[in-house]
Length: 562
Image 1 (tube, helix red, strand yellow):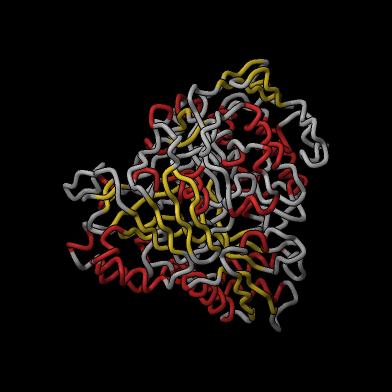
Image 2 (image 1 turned 120 degrees about the horizontal axis):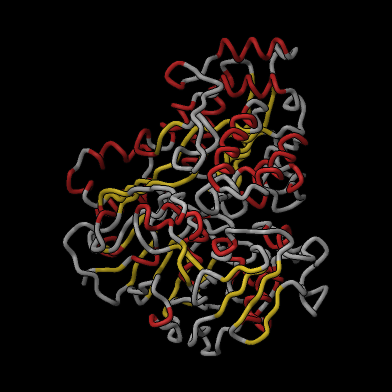
């Protein structure tokens, strides 16, 4: 899920931190099963997905960010905690959450003493500066847009391979101090630096696109083996010190992540929970077929972690393609879509609540809305057909849908296909490997008519949701997040106005209204506000769903009972 995150100190102080809950095994530090965690052992993570990117310059997908936090550190990060507490941003490499000056246009951070890489060398402010500069490289386009849009000179800087002197708006007066000079006030910059793009990268270890396979460790684990689509094995970084890191517990000696597995087989293995799988966890939620057996078995329910998120899943509609440039055709799709079938494809009610709006209810400024209602959320074919007829498309439309090549991705795509077939819209499914999904749909020349996607804000609120997904000026040829390629001058202007508001509550209300206005143009059709239900092995401790990872397990807190 392409996404973003949660939690600003300033927003927390203003009461704007989103609330997210967790249940089942996630209710206690010991996994909810009366077990004391011990240090050691091998934790197994069973994943139906490939990892899209581990390079911190390119890592902008929640699943990969969850893994990346084991390998590298950032200036700030999320607290390791279930529920609302997990939405709080805390210092990581930095001693605090940053010190703003010049009207929040300048931010200064000081690094903690004793932070080291996997080879024992100290992490310096210059390494963080270099890590941010790499995000400007043309060959690394998938990361967030903040450096380009917020740093002075970010609109012209081309990266360290083109300009070895670096970007002048990041200063490193000494090895422990880094100063960011912004072109606008950014009150929440202390949260932005929790993103992977603010991880340190030593210049002599930079291998360009190949860095994706072997990021240099600043966290508790280093990469011992990474075989794309098969396995990621992490072992201890012996130079990491818990004295400098209050977030990561680093309990297992090794973490082995098996990739690209059959999700049904993963469920079967965790349900049995024997042998090696007693020390295993699922990376993704249980499949729809397993919900009934798990929920009906009290012993299994004790091992089921349910985490909330701040994510909305939606069907994105490419507004640049005919006939999708006609709002009536897009409205027809919104009325035709069977949201209940899409939720069923993900496991039913345990997978979340049916979405009626762009912003989930936990988002500050959320405004209730349901512009395209249907009986029991199963679609309204009659209204959809009338709109297609009004658009001169009564004879039918043929579209191509980009979807992840997973069991759940296929089930969702088929639900869309069946929904739209009822109104004369033929949908061809283009299945894309998870390791390349967002890189493909984020390329405007490769993206097709429809995309199954979703978004989580980078912190609680709409300021990194609506601008990133719907500001037409942020559409890029590669690494694009605006899959609808939606570009409304009116919306763009309103985004600029809201960004200048000094009252966070007023800004939140304005974003809520703007979300309603955007839905009248139907660039996307929201269908689910996510939850995640995940099984853990009998020996696993410290399991809880984290709101930043779309309710997935917070890997940095897991341990084993031995």
